[in-house]
Image (tube, rainbow over all chains, first blue to last red):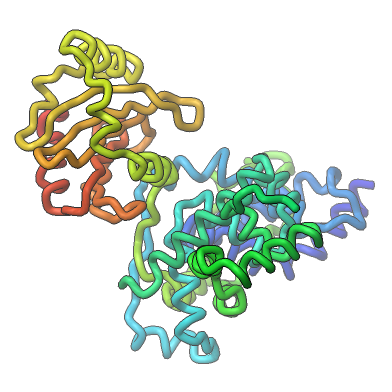
Length: 166
Length: 251
């Protein structure tokens, strides 16, 4: 079973890497840390491929691994470093990402969401971007469904309070 | 018909189509008939299409990250992220794309969860919260000593004597199963303030001024503690008091 699972996980990972990186960005807000987290997740997923149930969702299984690595290993290191992203002006952006066309309201709401405290940010990401139900999000985050709903309410409120305030 | 007041969480579930049909209909009715409900919906509504467009675009700028060649349980190879180093072209790709990812982030810091929790609680405070049952001097001192002891910090009223703020009482709250100290003050106008702190595994950091839950606040890390001074709407006053507290803590 190990070799079959290994193949299933190995074949599924490349398509998942951008989403793992994106989840990593939501948690770390730092490009290098997100990449490191994505790679660590891929490595751990391969190590544990024997535990994966073929036919179940590989993405959700990998997200759980990523969340665990962040919480138990990388997070305290990041807090100690006190890292943050340096904002970049738009002139620099047009050369490197010419095909990425993001309108102003998309950019603004994304930006405000990324400024939320981690708990609200992560919960909103899982439910509104990755499509987790409240119950799935509660399981993934090991919190009650009521707390998921509070975080979503607080996150939404805060995003609205912050919109248009730069 | 259920007449219990609607919570924000129910409104969010309504917006997310996550309510059972009966409740969904009930909220829809309330929204149509009650302007205060409509107002609450407005405060909670977020453009999910815009949000998803933004996050979709993030995938477009995701760096090329190599899937590891082999699981790290081969002999002689250490496992775990600590030993993984990004090399060569992967690192270069990430650097270049980092600029694209910077497109999405306007600020460098998000507030810590605990400071948001403190703010959400502090916003409930009024003058009367602290004046209705004022503590006699001895009890006030005891509350301070015990709160300090719970956090492993020796606190005296002298250390807290900052011009313009009158110390009222200390209490021990809890966050993530660890003690959180709250020292409550009133300024000369009766505006409530709080100096809260908890043990934190982080290096000292410069004070950050921000609006939390509509209150002026300054947060900082010092000597293994995270601090927040919060209250009112005068950021300059809070910054000035913060400097004085930080100086006193440092001696």
